[in-house]
Image (cartoon, rainbow, N blue to C red; front, side, top):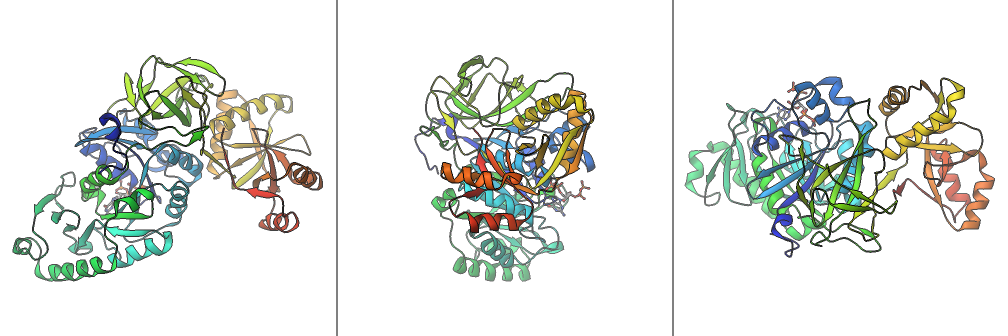
Amino acid sequence: MSNRPALPPEIARRRTFAIISHPDAGKTTLTEKFLLFGGAIQMAGQVRAKGEARRTRSDFMSMEKERGISVSASAMSFDYRDFRYNLVDTPGHSDFSEDTYRTLTAVDAAVMVIDGAKGVESQTRKLFEVCRLRDLPILTFCNKMDRESRDTFEIVDEIQENLAIDVTPASWPIGVGRDFIGCYDLLRDRLELMDRADRNRRAASIEINGLDDPEIEKHVPAHLLEKLREEVEMARELLPPLDITAVLQGTMTPIWFGSAINSFGVKELMDGIGNYGPEPQPTPATPRQIAPEESKVAGFVFKVQANMDPKHRDRVAFVRLASGHFERGMKLLHVRSKKPMAVSNPVLFLAADRELAEEAWAGDIIGIPNHGQLRIGDTLTEGEALRVTGIPSFAPELLQNVRAGDPMKAKHLEKALMQFAEEGAAKVFKPQIGSGFIVGVVGQLQFEVLGRRIEDEYGLPVRFESSQFISARWVSGPKDKVERFAEANKQHMARDNDGDLVYLTRLQWDIDRVERDYPDITLTATKEMM
Ligand code: G4P
């Protein structure tokens, strides 16, 4: 069921996706089950990270450290049935949400995990909105059905109302909480029964011929069956049927009900991603978009991660291949610097191991170790000067002044800050008045991480101090109007780390005032990274 039939089979079988969820909904558990079913790990429980470690770094990184297993940070690949899945990690902690947002530019679909008792939570909504900006297809997994959960219609309604997306049930839960026994697969007319005894076992599938098949009575107690028949009838009347085009356009989400911890509903979800989740999609770029089936390789950096080893300044750039068939040793053009780059030691993140990538296809994620040449938003091609667009940079939600402990080291501090800004770890603003820097982040924890890294990696103790400003907006408009605006609001103006003009705000009122008094000026909370 493909939306772009012309892809070479190796590309057509790739599914590159991320999981979006509110912390605690079950993302880690679900990931673990994906890996288990994908044959990447032998036993569930191997990949769990706990407590603070998990919250301060990417889940996968802390797993790697704590468990001594080589599950890579940020991206993992595994095979299940006919498909190659590339799961790109989105850090669970809301403090790193900007990273998360950018990650979503590297995927073709998202799996939204919600907790059946809690429904749509704040972080889910935020991430969903970003998916929507890109019309990303979303498949929903309603987790923790083994516990007391909300009424199924209520959950579906809440998603429809809250997120303004059509919801079509792919499965329907049978029983609630302790009485939950499994699901009826509405797409394949099958009964899926949960095995509470063995949490790592896939559920038993029982082929039946619709809800009136007497076979079903052997497996579902009468009172649950009656309710199931009633609800399914109602659901079929009230809710839209699966429309694959609408799913691919991001206006409809199929929902599966399950329990990740019990491995229940997971294989149906994986099949769903395979069957309905999109193949690698074209990548927006200028001056033209890049189609995955193009024979020439192109890719873009969506994430940069400093090496775990603090003695080396090496970084790994995570590159999503937008097109072609990549082979190790290829020389690619680094479009921003116009310099060729031999990619001799790329890493492929097969979940079982971090491996040298001998080859990769459009849709895959490869890691390219480098010394800082590769930045977020950079494009690599086989020669054409293409630039991938749509990699957003978000206005920070927290601002602080930063000072070097030793005032003589101000220049060093500037260098360190610029480097972290390039990595996407923070925004750095140079106010037009005064000599200091303001650092902007999305969550408080980022200040701590940044402070620690500047000290560790540059030997520079730094101090963060509160700033009168709370956020920043990028400024655009006709040149003369922008100049006049900047002149009249000097105490608010700054340049970001790319040299672009921003307006620093103290209160929402500042933004309202600009909108009222300067109708030609546009203030935006996002900008493209180039
Ligand atoms: P996250 O990555 O989205 O933050 O969630 P995570 O998978 O860590 O799951 C959060 C908690 O919910 C964990 O419990 C996990 O065991 C539990 N959980 C996940 N899936 C299910 C499910 O299907 N049913 C039930 N009942 N619980 C589920 P915890 O107590 O925080 O951790 P742990 O002690 O179990 O490791």
